Length: 471
Image (cartoon, rainbow, N blue to C red; front, top):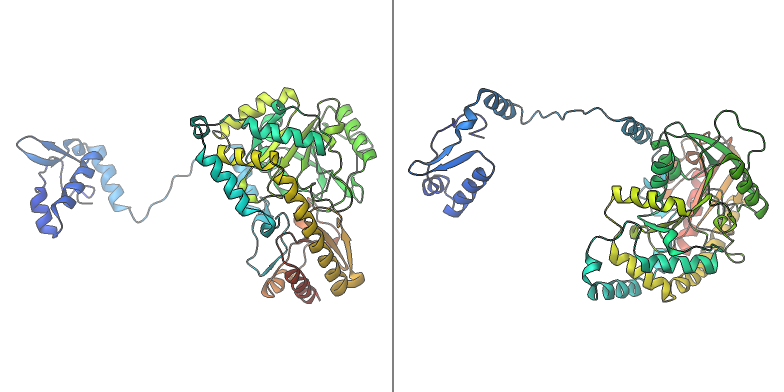
C-alpha cells in the first residue's frame, strides 16, 4: 500500500530485510519472502551497491495516476460491465425469470418429494468403490491422460451391447458419444443443430432442462399438448416454418408419466420424415417399469437416421456421477464430438471405466432388479397414502413407471397453488407444482411427487402433512 499510495516514490530505497524484520518484530525470513514477492510482482528491483528500490518505471505519470486511483478506490471497487452477446442475454434473462431448472432449487425439508432423484440407499456403494479403486490402482498412463471427447471405448461398447439387448436399438459403439449428463447432451444438440429463430416442437408439459437449452440457443418453442397417450402429433400443416427439432420423452413422459404407444410412435416418425425434422428422444428413466419389460426405444424404430437417443445414469445410479450418452445418426457423430471437445477436454476417465465394469460385470442389471422391487414397494405405499388422505380429490397419472407420480387435485383450479407452498414447507414438506413445467399454466392444479430416496414411513408422514397443508 505504501507503493500504491505513492508514499514510497519511484527509485526510493527500501530498508534492508534485517532492519525491516527488527522494526516489524517478525523473523527475517518473513521479510525476505515479502521482498521476494514484491520483486516477482514488479514493484521493486535490486541494484548492486544500492540495495532494494521501488522501480523507476512507476514514475510514469499514467502509471502513477492508475496506481493512485487504485489505492483510493480499493474499498469502492466496481466491476466493468462487458456487453453480453445475444446468447448471454438470453441465458441471463432465463436465470432472472427463474426458468433455468427450477427443480434444482429444492426447499430444505424433512419430506422432500422432489422428482428426478434415485434411491440413494439402494445403490451398492461399497461395490462401486471397489470397482473405482481397482481401476485407479491399475490405471495405465493413457488412463491418466486426456480422454477422447467421444468417451472411452470400453463404456461405449458396454452401452451398445445393453441397448441392443434390452431396448431394441441396433447401435454400434462408434455412434455413441459419452457426455457429462443429459443436460450437456441437450446443450450439444442445440449448439450443433439450432440457429436462433429455429422452431422446436416440445411436449406440453415438458422437462424444463430441455426448455432452458433450447431457449438459450434462441429457438422458438412450439408446444404440442400431451394427453394420456403422450404427445399429440400435429395433424394439420403448421403455419410458418416447420420445426427443426422435436423433443419427446416417449417411454415415460415427463412430468405426466404417460407412455407413447406404438401407433403414435410410428405417426411421430412419419411426421418428422415429412417435416424433415430431427427427433430427440430423452430416455431418462425407462429402466424403472413396474408392469412388463421396458418398451422398445423410438430409436429402435427409426429407419431414416432421424432420432437422437439421449440416455443418462443419474436416475439409476446417482446424479453426482455426471455420466450420460448420446446415440447419434452417423452423420452427427463427428460434429457432436467436435462440439464436446470445444466445451471440455473429455469426460472423467476412471469413472467411465468403472461404469463399464459395473455394466459388463452384470452389476448394473442386478442393481436395477433390486431397486425396481424396492421402488415398487415405495410406489404402493405412496399410492395408498394418497388414497387415504386425498381420496376422490386426487387423480393419479404415471403410476406404473419411473420414480414419480403426477397428482391432479380435483378440488382446486388454476396453475400454481397460491399461498400453500410456504405452509407446506413450514410443515416440513417440499411442494412441487406441475405448473412450472408448462409454457402456459394448466387450468387445473397438479403436484409432482418423487419417492425414490424416501423411506416408507417418510412417504406416509409426508403425504399426511401435505394433505393437511392443502386442506
